[in-house]
Amino acid sequence: ALIYFITPTYPRREQVAELTRLGQTLMHVPRLHWIVADDRPDCSQQTMNLLPDFGIPYTYIASPMPAIYKRATDAIPRGVSNRRAAINWIRLNHNIDDTKAVIYFGDDDNTFHLDLFKEIRTTKKISMFPVGLVGEYAISSPIVEKGKVVGFFDSWPAKRKFPVDMAGFAINVQLLFKYPYATMPYKAGFEEDRFLSALSIQLEDIEPKAENCTRILVWHTQTAKKPKPTVMVRSKAALPGSLATLLD
Ligand code: UGA
Ligand code: MN
Image (cartoon, rainbow, N blue to C red; front, top):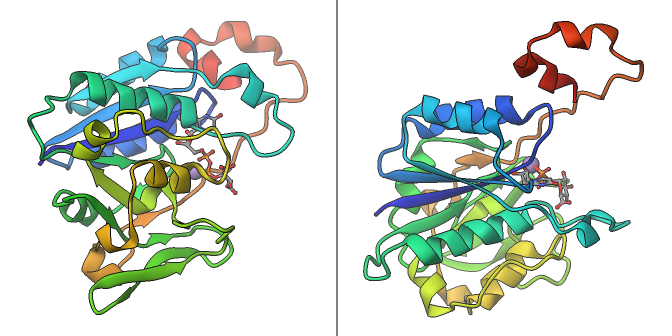
């Protein structure tokens, strides 16, 4: 089966570094289509220049977070507008008769073991597996008994039916066509739960992967932000444009 690997990303100093590291992981994965979905109004020249370097099939699309959510005083729904655009791209471009493709949401800052791709490729409906370095407990994982998922271990249950991380599940593409209106909500913290509920997922449907959820094959790593300079950078004009963007 083909893997659609959806990466929400957004413009910031760290973006090129994150996409370079991720692209160089995905280079090792056969039969993968990378959908890079940028949180901005249009595609950037910088990213358009970078993506061909990895020699893998990709689609680059842009879809900005609506302004009303950016103004939110509490948590903002990160990566939702762009993940939605990627979901819709698949609905429009995937051959509905090819029932074998699998969809996975891989953030631009996470770390992926190559074995993860072998695990998710066989997803019939929905598969789940542990994610490392999530929240206070540092592990978010389905709890498996006798080969069946019976519950979840997560630092933030929050009355969610599926207290899982975005990186902790993969779905078969058929679900997008079976539930053509299902999408991800603009509700920070509840993106995974509401998306899976919209796809009518039940506990019995979940296929535990990674040796019955005993191995961590993906980590929710985070890159420390470089603060913007507090004083005006006088000699910026002397830098070539490609370097000067790091100062923005
Ligand atoms: C962060 C925090 O560490 C969590 O504590 C918090 O719960 C979470 O955000 C949240 O507010 O939802 P993380 O999921 O690692 O966790 O957030 P990011 O990596 O910044 O964003 C997730 C994905 O969305 C990334 O692929 C990122 O590139 C993308 N993103 C982020 C956007 O597309 N737009 C944004 O404005 C921010
Ligand atoms: Mn992250």
